[in-house]
Length: 377
Ligand SMILES: Cc1cc2nc3c(=O)[nH]c(=O)nc-3n(C[C@H](O)[C@H](O)[C@H](O)COP(=O)(O)OP(=O)(O)OC[C@H]3O[C@@H](n4cnc5c(N)ncnc54)[C@H](O)[C@@H]3O)c2cc1C
Image (cartoon, rainbow, N blue to C red; front, side, top):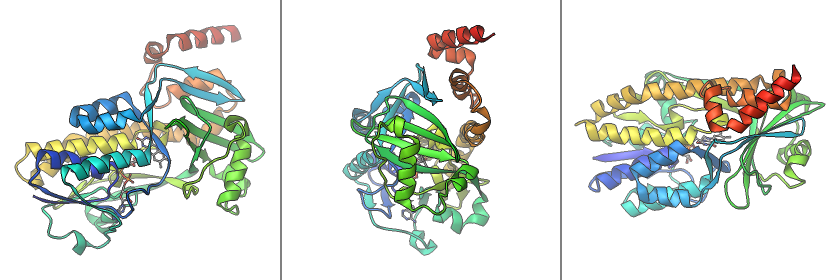
């Protein structure tokens, strides 16, 4: 089978790895527009479940990936300068580039034909293959080329975000709320290697405009935010990787398949970064597509099966991510809350964790919270 995978991100590489290892006789070509050592962003987080999927599907790459993991089990909420910790939430952080390079290495070793610095933009460039996997990310050219067939919706959300790194280590998934004369600034921070943390800053449009961000260049914006979060950064710098303010694009598609072409990963769906699941979804898509191809005899029925089996799970996660995203978009109204209440609301915001579940994760936190509530009556 001749397979073309457009995009060498987690979705495209992991699918290629699984398919090539199982079928060494298949031709699998990955076209990636970037060089092997280039990517956007800094580190990403995974939960426990992701690690299990990776182990079950390809142990050698799982071993390499997990060997670089920074692990923690606490979510820290910082509000009005007070930190509230909730334990029992197992996460791992990894540098995005490290993850990609591990996947590249395993793909190349398996015999995948990975072509870097190869940008595909026209249908004639992906003609003649038996299967075309469009794993070309949130701005997918394939999705835009066949917009009438896929029926995409791209909802540009109001908040702005910018993705930095920092040498300050945040030993846990840290959500920081800082208010100043311009409005509310929220940071999502966690370490992803021994020396670096991700530091994503999110804000609402009114705060962004009041702070004059539309007139600040990249370094002026960074200096401003270093000031806002000076206490949290302990005076350290924010590090840029062409870090620019963006709006989150919520992507969905009415149809996932067009002929022998299928969308995968962010090209197909996005999930707000506040629940840290986009890469996990990309991996799960790859596994589901691989399994559908194994189970069915021909490409059309495998692609139909992929969509049938996978759509309910994606819908479910996107619904939880949407609730979380909207909470952050409206976080201003909860800034009147005490840090303890804010932490409780944050933990239960997406509907995936209820009080009982929270109690199982961290009975001490729930006991502390109940006693604190009681004391306020
Ligand atoms: C601020 C932020 C924080 C995030 N944090 C997390 C997190 O903590 N945990 C998590 O799980 N997820 C996180 N995500 C989501 C995660 O980054 C994505 O969901 C994931 O990268 C999707 O993988 P993908 O392979 O589908 O797409 P991508 O990783 O975007 O890969 C697509 C690839 O296609 C290439 N490409 C694009 N167009 C072409 C073309 N025309 N020709 C050739 N190549 C092309 C690109 O160069 C890229 O390498 C975050 C996202 C954001 C924005």
